[in-house]
Image (cartoon, rainbow, N blue to C red):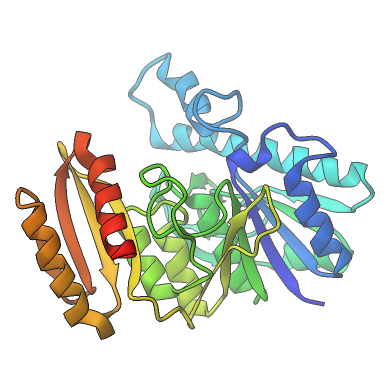
Length: 328
């Protein structure tokens, strides 16, 4: 039997009931005999009752100046609610489960409240429950300090929790379930129906994530790379195989495009395979001639070309760039 870690984001956990899509994935792994650790985010997104932003707003209504410890205290609640509900749902369909907060799961962090880093994980309690035949449901995004203060891990914290647990548990694979079917070559909010990758290397994914590709946090990718833990990005809402992040990667000419906001501007980064440098640069020169008002630079260390565009032109430019390099 193999250990797998399944992480479900906030959009995956909306409208929780016995017909929920995320539940089908857990049941499929259970039917295969996998030992399962589930990592959950807070339910929903901004404005919804249990989302992290909604919880923070409860403090901001009183005073926007918030002690970081108190902010972490309330931010940790959303994931705890998710863990309790998901564990109860699993029990209701006959799957033994155990909900754990991040600190009950043994996640020890530094004292940098709101953006803490994981120092180590004591997995003994998780292993005990797995050996009892239970599915362990861990509240993502959180841990505790040596002084037993509650901490949170910052943006993408549940991804980081999942991959870190995968590393310490020596999991066969970490599955990051989200609302998109994998890693797209271009942000699907910019380009409708972009191509999705079947596989990508840790380093290529790290470069994209560090430059704004939000499908997974770069810290999570870095942990996976360090511990050689395969990570799969896939949709909660279908059975597609998604994108595998591992050492193997792919030999595509275009590795991907990333979008990152700057002050009053937007940075569009374009990563390419260095084997095809001459071909890429020839096409870039033609593209620049056709778009001579675009500010750009090359980064040979990361095999990247960067364009700076006005915020209001991002969608138009992103489509133009994507179509030029993918269809020519």
